[in-house]
Length: 330
Image 1 (cartoon, helix red, strand yellow):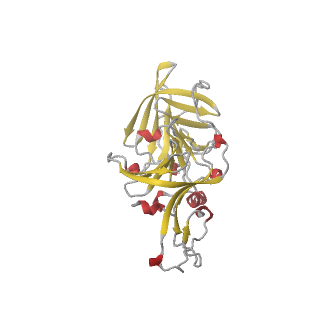
Image 2 (cartoon, helix red, strand yellow):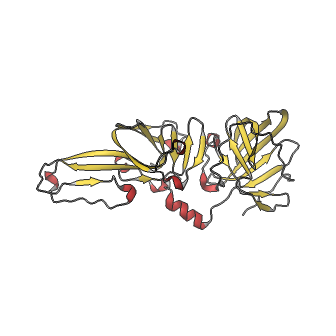
Image 3 (cartoon, helix red, strand yellow):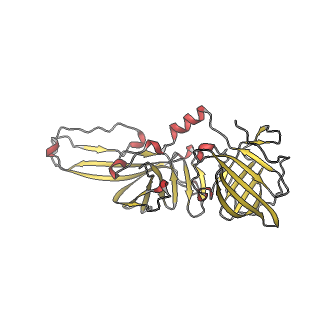
C-alpha cells in the first residue's frame, strides 16, 4: 500500500456535534473501494459517502479502521462526518478542482473562524485513493486510505455486476437481448449515491419477441423470445416455414428483475413492459462524455411511463434512469 506523506500528523480527535444533519442511513455499512466510482467533476462528489479503511499516522504507519468507525458524506451545502455513529457537520464554502483531485473548503457553523478542508486525492483513472482531512487551521491533517479489492473480490464483482465495457449500443437494435446488472444508484431528489446490494438481485433487460402471423396451424410457429433472459435459457428459432413466406410482428419489452426499492417492500419478481416508442437524442454539452447519447423509451401500461438510457461517447451504456433514480454500470 502506497503511503502519502503527511504535512502534519497527530492523534485523531473530533469535536462531535451530535445528530445535527440529515445523514444517510447506516444499514449499508461497507468500505468505499477505490474502484467504486470515477469522479469527472465536483458534481460527482455530491451525495457520495466515503468510508475509508485505513488511517495513516504521523510515523507513516497504517492502521485498519472498522467499517462504522468513520465516514464522510458530501453535499453542496454540508460535509457530514460520522465517527462510531456519532455525527458532526461542517458548512461547505466551496468545492474546487485541483491537479490532485478536489478540495472542499469547510467552515464550522458554530465557529466561523474554524476553517478546515477535505482533500480528495484521485489516481490517474480519476478514482479516489485518499482523503486528507483538516478540521481547522489549528489542527493537523489526517490521511485516510480507501480500500482496494483483492483479486478474489475483484473477480466476484466483475462476475456479478455489468461493466460498461461489456456493452456497445451504437443503434437501438443493439439493445435487444441485453441484461444489465447495475452497481451504483443515484437518487435525483435526495442526491444520494448508494452501492446496489447483490441481495437485491436487481437487473434490467431489453427483449424482442418475433411472433408468427402466417396463420398456418399445420406448421410450427416461428417465435423468438428473450422474455426468459434472466433465466439464461437458450432461445431457438425454428425455421420450418421458409423465411420469405413468413408474416411476423416484432414486439419489444423492458424487463425489471429484483428489488428497486427496499422501503416499498417489493418482492424479488420480474416485471415486463411493452415498449411503444424510442426517441434518440444527443447531448450537445461536449464535456459530459458519460451521458453523450440518450434513448428516451416510452412504455405501455407501466407505472414508470418512460425510462432513459444514457450512453457514453464510445456508445457504452453509462446508466439507466427510472423514476428519478439513475442506475450506473461499473
